Structures are given as structure tokens and as C-alpha cells.
Image (cartoon, rainbow, N blue to C red):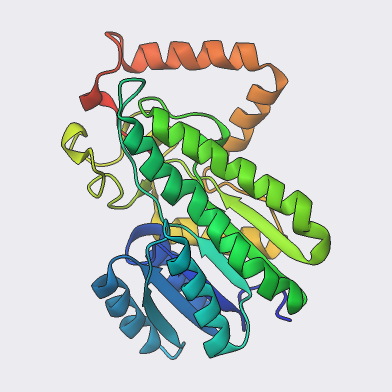
Length: 284
């Protein structure tokens, strides 16, 4: 069994790997000396280009086309990795996207986002954990957002699904921790990626890059975030917080949720004195 807290010599799967956070994690895991990295994404051309680039550096990296909201596709990804590499040590379930909208937004948008932000993590755990337990242990790294610990001004669906992703990770940790399964949940604020341009509601978003509430504590590069991921995995941390201020916000919320809600209401009013409109809502 590979120590699940360390990437060196690990067999790693990363979803949502064609760009942004997923791409940066693939590159960093390879640099850390992973035994093999499997880069998965619906964007086959994107992960194939990434795999070719990483493999040229001397670390085996393979590309797999995968729709994380489709359970058979996730099962094939996990089982195929074990068949080819003999085990699976770390699954970074990372795919995600954003939308803007509130109570008026179509239910179908919530259902689609729930598939990517929640069911994808569940499918990865459902099919990876039996392999990991049989091999003595493993680790799940599930990407959520600071919105999963707090909330997201401007996006009802993003807030709900990212909160659910954190709850799922907590449940898995409680239920399988004594069987050698480690769990971490990645909760960044603003990161410089193409997540907003890839959004189904991109036409409602401003075009000047990450800003607004999510960027109040700065915008990280994906490479900087990957540094934090490696450090948190080595430390065995559940919460992976690339923006340290998020820990303080969570503490304040836990200490007095009514006061925290009042503060968030005032924060929204300062950001949008005339009330939020779709064009104002830019997500983490």
C-alpha cells in the first residue's frame, strides 16, 4: 500500500484535468514523483495534450475521456486504472463549473450541477474505496469551494451543490476512516482559471476575470493552489484552504451563525447596493 498522505510513488487519478485546477494538480503530482497519473476529462483532446506533455518529463501520464456525471464512465475510469497499474492510491475528484441565478433559475440547471459537483464524488468513492480498502488504504481529494463551507453570493445552485460536496466528504471520512480511507475537501476562493468562460451562463458574467465577493482575499494561480494541496495531503488535513482567511470565516460562522448571516447580508448590500442582478454574479 502507498501511504495515502504522500504523492510520491502513488497511482493518482485526477478528473476535470484538461485545464485549470485539475491540470495544475496533474503537473504537480507528476513533479512530486507519482508512480502514474491518470488525467480524465470530457475534453479528450485537452487531456491527451496534457498527458503527452507530462509523460515527456518522465512520469507516466495517460489520458482518459470521462463524463464524471455518468456512473458507468467513472467506474470504467477507476477499474481501468487498477487493471493497468495494479492499484489506485489517490482520486482527485475535481471536475466542476459555475452558473449564475437564484430562485428563478431552472431546476434542470440544479440537477445537472448536482451530477457534477456531488454525484461525481459519490461515484468516485463508490468505485474506488473497495479497491483502496482491499489494498490497505487510499485517499480521496474532493474539490468543493469556499462556497461549500460558507455560501456563494449570486448562485443558489453553486452554493447548494458545493455545500453538499463538503457534507458527502465528511460522511465518507466518518464512515471509512477506520478502514484506511483518508478524505480531504478542497475549498478555495477565487482561482485564475477558465471556469467562468466555460459556464453555461457565461454570457451573464463580466469579462474581466475573477472579481467580486470570491476575490476579496486575492486570486491564486492554479499552480499556487496545487502547492497547498500537496502540503495539506502530506499533513492529512480534511479542509484544504488555499485562502487561509476562509478558516476564520468558518470559525465566525460556527461561533454565531446569526451574526455571520447578518454580516453576509451587509456584505452583499455593499457589493450590490441596488440588489444583485445576473450580470453582477461572478462565482468562485
